[in-house]
Image (cartoon, rainbow, N blue to C red; front, side):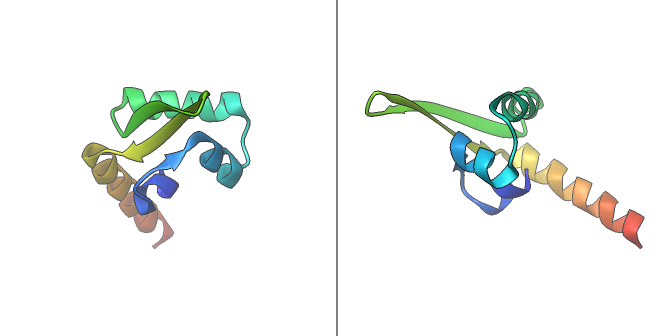
Length: 76
């Protein structure tokens, strides 16, 4: 979520590279975030290759802010 909150969007490969996770692990986390309506997904083709990009929704931004606030309270 932090990658998506600070960027307009990120594609699957960028997220995978940044997070150092497997395809399956990333896909399952993205699916959970999509189900919660925290992210949006846009699928297209670049040439003949599938290209999927992800972005954070308004709800996702609000919930992420709550999450960060809770972590900050724990730290204090």
